[in-house]
Image (cartoon, rainbow, N blue to C red; front, side, top):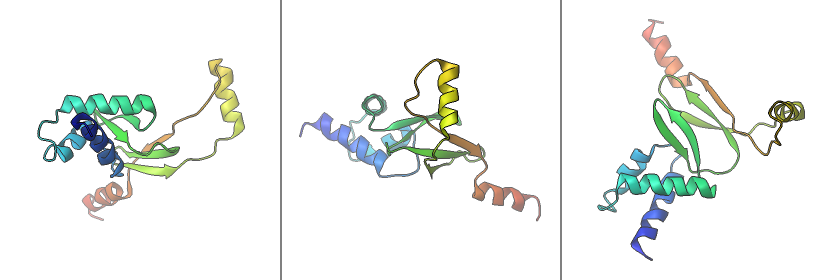
Length: 134
C-alpha cells in the first residue's frame, strides 16, 4: 500500500480508537513516532477529507480547539464547560413537532440534527465541591 494511504488509514484508525473526541494535534502526536515524516497539515487535510466523506464528524471548537469524533453513527454529546471533556450520549428521539417547527421556521426540509448538551461533568462537580471545603 502506498505510504500516503497508510498514513490516511492510520489517521482514521487513530481517531476511531479513542472515545476522547481528540484534536488534530492529538492525532498527530499519537502517530508521529510511527510516521516521522507526518505533518500536522497532512492530519488536518485528511480529517477534512473524512468529514466530507461522512466517515467522521467535527464537534466544532471546545476551548478554542476543533475536536473530532470517529464514530459516525447518530448520537448526542455532553461537553463539560470546566474541563472540556466530551462524552457520547445515546441519540434521543425528537418529537415530530420539533422537526416540523424547524422546517416551518427555516423553510427547509430537515434531514438530520446534532445535539450537544453543555454543563459540568461529575468529576468537575466533585472537584468544585471539594474545593469549597465540603
